[in-house]
Amino acid sequence: MSGDIRKRSVVIAGHATSITLEAPFWDELREMAEARGLSLNQMVAEIDQGRSGNLSSAIRVFVLSEIKRLAADDRGTDR
Image 1: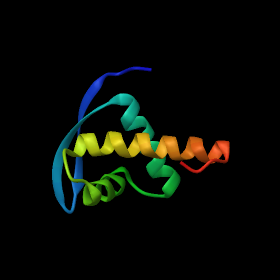
Image 2: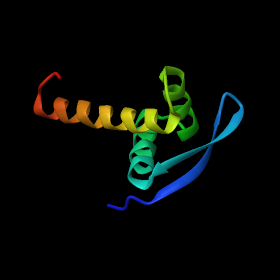
Image 3: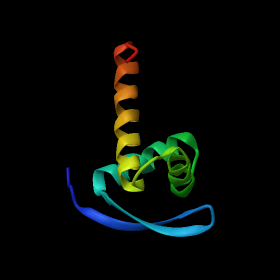
Image 4: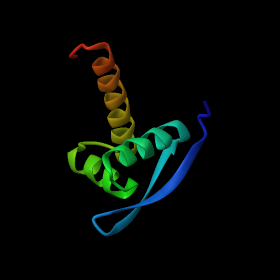
């Protein structure tokens, strides 16, 4: 798993912004967006609405939380 950090541009509420994130987080975020039928920009916009700090950090926390939730669902537990 590569930890290459890349800067990417996304559009949130009609405004372009850059986000720096490790490749594995981008890959997971893209898969999560596709699974929900959302574009990457739409997914990032949803995360942006609920954040209180740095957007890149909010994305990492979101991805981690979703992975943990899915793992708990697979185990049949509620965490």
